[in-house]
Length: 309
Image (cartoon, rainbow, N blue to C red; front, side):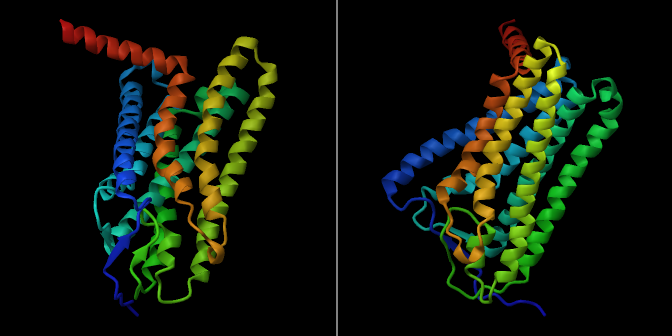
């Protein structure tokens, strides 16, 4: 039976209510978003143009950066424009679309981080078989699988949410649409849906995080057999990956592992993983990776020289 919704438009309360604070936040978050798009875009461009970065590790990194742009873009542009609006609204259909793409790109990123950990495991623990195992066909399949995994995860979330009826009130106490704040507006009890979210998002994040941590522990253990130079290079690369994993999974686990009956949305934590983390990833990877920095210098050095000529 089709659900009927009395609510067709939602009012978003936003992050802060003070107009002065909102104007300051507009400037700050606009700069952060621009840095996110430019920083991750540079990585995508550099990896695809520079021959020195044509390896599986950088292939996966370029897709991670692409996902970071799309993931951030599902929330931040609307959030920024709302900071200047007196009344912040979104249609119910727009809210559903934001939830779908937010979870789609978020879980795709989780799969890509797992793929990158597997790539480092093979490179360090099975170096003689690396070229055979991580051939380009396998790399493309792993990336395609990451996108499909994110899609199916998000489809489960959105199909479940579309079964609910919303009859008011129509106010979301958040700055973007997500499952828990939206569940509070449903006409019926959403405890079952809350358990599904706990399993599909919370437990999935926990298991993925534990898998990633375990893989990096194995990698670090196997580094004992490498030369001092090899250990330093591998540690530098793994440290970047581990930092990104912690920045991404920490807030996600904090938010989605709490029972929905006692759930209180921490907006500042949400700001961290929707706005700040996507900006930090390119900084982490470029500052700790000499090959990426050198490739960027060569690429943009050529651009500057050709422009002068």
